[in-house]
Image (tube, rainbow, N blue to C red; front, side):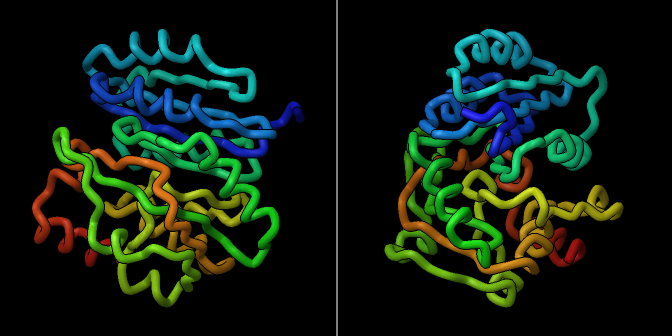
Length: 233
């Protein structure tokens, strides 16, 4: 196994003491034939997240190197996200926020294998489930997508159909402009910029869970979210 990570997992977290262990363990679940780098950035959480993270990362498997930072002062979600992306050393980047988690041990291997073989694709993403309280649900736009799909930048410009926890992309395709920290739909804008470099691949395999109602956007009402999205775009 090579010394330099082929893929970096970026994980930002704030106030996720109830969920962060499951998020980290979803990364540790991954079976890969390459080295993985897990970068955890705790944005000075006012709870027991730091203690839970330090205890959990002691169980890291041999194929995963963990780099953990607990910021002394709160940076804010978007600044912390950019900081974390800049720490990535891998050829590829995957993201999983501290309240989401992965469920398939072959997720990273499958997505990296696809991108390695298909250089004209910029992003690989997959189907996810939504966890609302204690109930797992499949959203309509995922439930109806039962086959592999190829999408373009034009299609993505109509709506964001890529869940953060499902995406894997090349670091070289990543450009972070100065104005990024002033937006409120950061991931969507990142996808749009990345997908100028290639096509989008969708796998119908369910490989992760998005925890609905715990993140910033999922807790806002639809009108407020739409208004912020339009302003940012």
